[in-house]
Image (cartoon, rainbow over all chains, first blue to last red; front, side, top):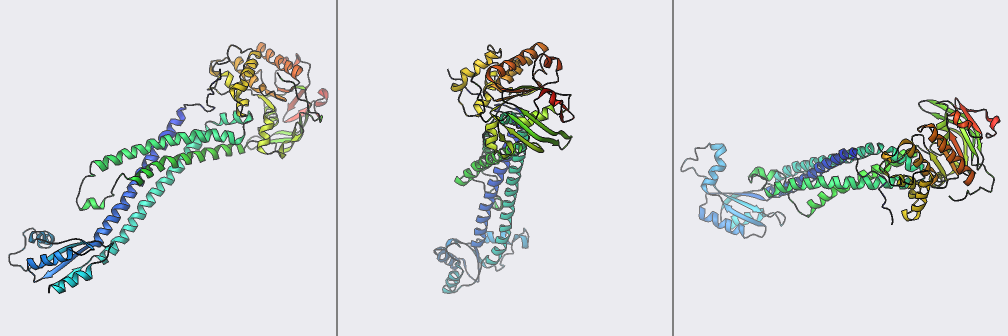
Length: 291
Length: 238
């Protein structure tokens, strides 16, 4: 009967438990950072689009019926999602920071305000709205957010870059720590390298043993970290991520779509490659010192 | 046990020409060593602790390159060889280390089979051979024993079996009796003598056990302060 071959490297080693934890924790952090960065990108994109699409129309000396007519015609434009005339209560809320909580005095002439949510991807409707105002003989102004949006776009670009830099830094740190920890774990196995070397094993054979070992270890640990990140993300996504107000629009939008899963799978893969490369380089370097 | 494969070119098994070895921390440990070990010879290497015996053996079993000088093994200049060729040459050398250097997580069988396994052979091909060799060194009943369960003498014999499994042309042993009692030491050296006589393996044994050496009528080389001395008396030195 044929004998089973025991692996040349011991199957269990307490020293590798620490390496397993380090890789798992770093993959968890890196995956979570990558998902958050992607969420930040999505939030910035949505926020920028919303700001760019917000148009306010001020209609002076106009009654509610005429204002509604304007709103109906603006709503019918192809590049407009919604156009709506604000009620007096809504205007009071808008003016509250300036006039205080007491409300506006009765009889104070206030203009009709219409908010328009435009689809800027299709085209800017400012000129068309001005034409409608002119057609209906309404004295009004169209105030877009183009200038403000430009500033916001600049700020969002910085935000994106910062998020990307954080994830790049964390990933690079994770790779460096994994490589260093693998190197340290491997040096503790120097005795096995020597015995195999002096038994006539070729460098590639010895390096291959350690490469496979640390590749599998890092994949398993990285997968553990990625699953932990997945669970945290799922928890945030499925519990509704808290508030729904304006502040919610500023927060990263975590999701779990195809690309998020790809990001999660990349974490253990990169960890595995880093550990494998570190194992190869360490073994070959240590053998370089021998004949 | 297969027959010894003589090198028809009449090259010595080992030839050292002006070999020196310097370590960064301890300085020069071997100085201008010239040495020839003829094929099929049996030689002792002796000298006080720190004389450089282990360092000399390390050069011969290709663990280190010399700082100066040249080493020829079986007619081949080692510094001219590529790493792959060095690995192949290493498989022609059996080494018994002073501290055994067995892999504790493997059994006696697996430790002995290691040189064959790293050469790509499958267990089916070497199973009987390994068991026969373990029987020959008196461990027929401990084939599947884990290394930590073996006594010092038994571990030493596993290390010897591992050194012999490749049917080496050169067997190098560093203090092979250092960790066993005198009786076991005697048995081990007789085993080597038998191997040299029956198979023709070139054998070099480093030991400081002069009493044991006297029981064997073979050349003795002595290292002192990194230099080979008393060479003419034994005729084994170039």
